[in-house]
Length: 431
Image (cartoon, rainbow, N blue to C red; front, side, top):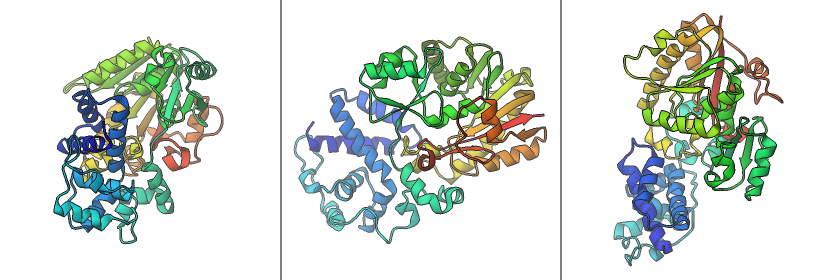
């Protein structure tokens, strides 16, 4: 593809994302490129980089386009990104020639002229644009980070590293390092997770023998630590109530050394089917799946039977914006209210499954207090049989090395402080 054709592709990809605001962006991008098999690997990366670059700078680009007197569109957002971020002249690209974007209209030319020579950041920008944060999430993030919010916002706007979890059912961390090195991939041990490896840059992990054999799994270090603080041991009975594709189930099954039983629950049959395939590749044979359906009495029949229950609740995903930059603009205040209500409901269901003396772990990939500490406070007020197990005690109980990444009662990870996605976890014991 020519450079101009790549830009046309990026405009089309942005338009596809805008056309389905409630659908996961990665699924849209997958279908977009599958329908355009003529786009090779290098061109696909170039188109993706430009489109996701515009998505990452969305709030700032929208502010500039509107300041120039226009309403944002995929064409104008890419134009603004070219001018303000890449310092390129759009007139050399928007030519209307074969495979290139259509020539600029008079109105678009006026926008390009208004942006030319400007810096991406402007003193007149409101805080939401300056920090590249949506208005609905700003109060919670200000409460969470206070004066360090600019640093956290910058980290959330960046790109995430490639984190791997070594599967101890298949081998050691040293063995994984050697296997990856043998395929030309350099990795480094993580600072907190005893099973974690971090890979610099983009690497085709999925095609490596280490991945295909189940020796390593892709998993952010923060996500690994949530699985770790459940403290699941061999022989226990564990429920992962919102298992999704089974990433944390895999990690917990590993800590159980394939002994005992872990049930991965979810409302999505396709996600559970994918989880089952991952279990087989990883050599996990103590895990089962259960599809949660309306009217399902599975939970009632198993009340008080589990040593550990993980509620990795659906949330706004504010902690994963490095990986899902579109999510900050696809949600709003109403979504937050609905999710908080759903979290409360699921947490109460999970509590019923915990046996006396067992642990309930509530986790989110959110950095908003409404979904984290306040949710826990409400739960504890309504369930006096439960009490918080402070992070230091949960860490020690899980036999984790080194020191925990914080001194408070909860696990709280953030991109700027820890280099991970943003995660929250509260460990609670049933009396």
